[in-house]
Image (cartoon, rainbow, N blue to C red):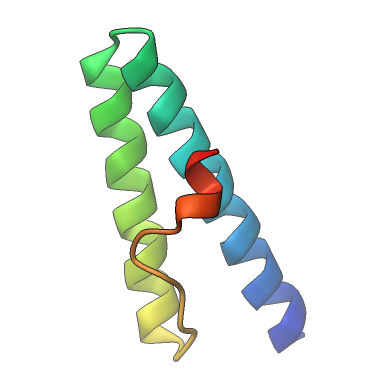
Length: 62
């Protein structure tokens, strides 16, 4: 179960970061801010569960 939780966090983090980048590219700063907050929350949850995720993953920004 831990592996699926870890994987789900990683997937959600990737989606949040991509959505943030897309919103920023579209000039939607409110949307970008919301997705940045989502990414920060996912990193916090991961930290609480001892799951190490990169604070900033360049591959997520591609």
